[in-house]
Every structure is written in C-alpha cells, then in structure tokens.
Length: 356
Image 1: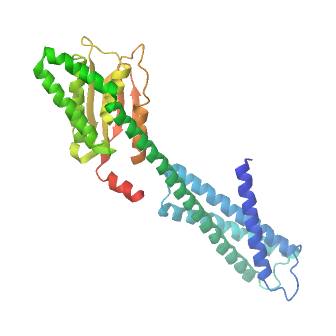
Image 2: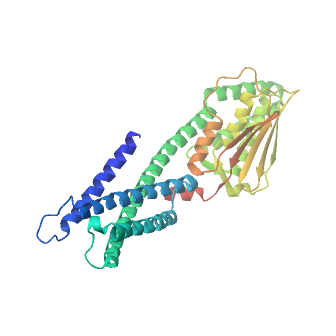
Image 3: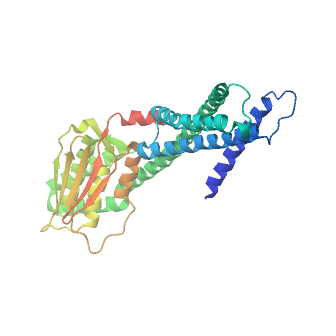
C-alpha cells in the first residue's frame, strides 16, 4: 500500500476513535466509569470502525467514478453522490444493528427491554453520523477540486502567456524581418507594383501583430485577413510554390481562435514539407460543421528539417487547453496532413473572466 493510502487510513482511524470516545464519555453510565472492554463497548466500537470506514470508502469510490466520467464535479453531481452513498449504507447499517441486537444480544448485552426501540435508536444515530461523515468528505473533495482547478488555471495562464510571447516573437524577429526586406529589395528592381503590394501586406501583418499583442483571442475574420496577407508574402517569397483555398461556411465574425493560430499552422507545414513551383504545396482552410476548423496541407515530408523553434502544434494545443476541453486533433495521412481546431464562441472571454 502506498504511503499516501496509509496516511489516509491513519487519519480516518484517528478521527473515528476521537468521535467514538467523545460520544462514549457523554453517555450517562450511572456515575460509573465506562467499561471500554465489555461486550457492548466492543460491539459499538467495531460498528463505528466498520460503518465509518465503509461510508468513507464508498463515498471516495463514487467521487472518483464521477470524476472519471465527468471531470470537474457540479453541485448536482455531489448531491447524487450523497444520495448513492446513503442508499448503499442504509441497508448495511440496518442489517449490522439487526444482527447485533437480535442475534448477538446474549453476548453484547445491547438492550434489556424492547429490541426494536434499541434498533431504531442505534440505526438513527448511525444514519446521522453517516450523513456527517459524507458531508465532511464531500466538502473536503470540493475544496480539493477547487484548489486543483485554480492550480491548473494558473499553470495554463502561464503557458498561454509564454506561447503568446513566443508567437509574437517569431513574427517580430530579425530573421522574419530580414527575409521580408530581402524579398522587397529584389522586387524593387523587378516589379515595383508588386513591391508596393508587398510593402502594404507587410505593414498589414505588423499592424495586426501589434494591435493584438495583448489579446490571446481574435475573431476568425481578423485571423483570416491576416492569413491572406501572410500567404501573399510567402507566395511572393517562394515564387508561387504555395496555394491556399478557404471554405468558411460560418460567420467568421461570430467565432474566436487564439491569435496567430492559422499562421502558426501554415508556417509549421512550410517548415516540415518539401514544396516548389513545380510541386506546390496546397493548403486548405475550411469549417467542419459550426464548431471546428480544419487546416489541411499537402504532405511531402522534408528529408532534412530546419531546426525547430519550439512553436507549432503543441503551442496551439497549450493555448486551446486554457479555453476549452475540446481537443486539437492531428491526423497524418499518406499524402495530406490535417489539423482540426475548435471554434470558440465569442462569449468565451466573459466565461473565463468569471471563472478567474
């Protein structure tokens, strides 16, 4: 048995003994000191141990079962757990005292008069104590769950801040700016109109990044607009080796996604796949129902990959984990690579502010 399990048993054993002896000392024994080793005392002590530990264990198992099925428990779940625990313990306690009072009275000396009266007294007392134990245990687990959720939220907030910082840093980095300016320099001698468009798109990208540097969520509409400018620049830089199609069947202004998510997924595809003007990489961004967005690209894995920056799909997963339990799904097929991300409702920010 693990150390934690032994500690739990020891604490509960101590609590049961303290409660039992406090009750024992408050009972009138006709001015005499209570006999702790009589048949009666042994029976009631054993009943306290058996019923208290059974109540605690059954309650723990029900809480664990509900948590595995539902995750964080609601007040309704706790009410159901209390009800099921009492439903199991009531017949158990009734049977235990029935056997003691009606079949073991010659050994335990539990009553001298009406056995049914004694049974009702003992059973009613056991039920009151069982309810107290269950409420205490449920209250403890609720506080523990609250503390765990707070710790998880704090950790996720740190991950979100770190991920957002890395995302912005990757775009404002000297490397990105150098490549963009290098492409622009070449265009100024070859096609001034295209160079003018490139400058406008570059300015649009940086404006988007700077305007949303404090926002972790943006509307799908804004993200698609940024992706359009980003893909224009990448296409110019890579001489038409990239093609992108969008098929959005929802109102993009009604949904949110983490800032720079689409750019990150496209950049991840460019980093890990081979593409050229003769064999362009096709990228498809489309909605799946009203709750999911799919980013799919041609899969031709590079023989030699560039050094990873630590961004990419894991970054996206970490940021989504803060806002929803829906998973970011990744599927690698023979010729396509698919990433499916949730679309977040506009009120998700308000919900998180309330939770925080």
